[in-house]
Length: 195
Image (tube, rainbow, N blue to C red):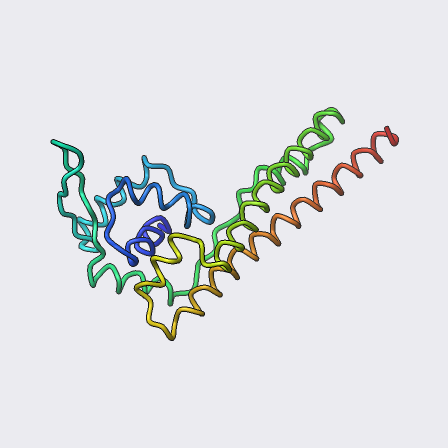
């Protein structure tokens, strides 16, 4: 259900079409919540049906139209209520750590390849998140700039600092996963007789 609130967060900045939302999703909330177009468009229609959004047809090219969505007062209230309600944590589904628990079934080289892939993945993600922090600090992030335009002056620093805080947590998580996988490589070498 968090997809709904991620979309409300984006639409609290300005009205957008599904296409615009999909593009902005990837460059902002997509860093913390993945959703393909096949989930975004149906959710927008459900949200409109639930009166959280209103949609209006706008011209798109010479003969086509698109629906541009605008958050309603009910949508703003639902988003605020969600933000003020403690999360209910779901049970873990972590295929990487599940697999690591049974690496004795893998060849040492396959186990090493899995650990190296884990390191490479998290190094890329860490770099993306560090770049996002740099954009947030420098004021060059487009979505943050748009959000700040509609944010009261007295709340702007809080808005920026909470975004930076979020990405710092993701950087720290990536660093932990990289360290864990490096220890895994050492363990594989130790258990494989130091090869």
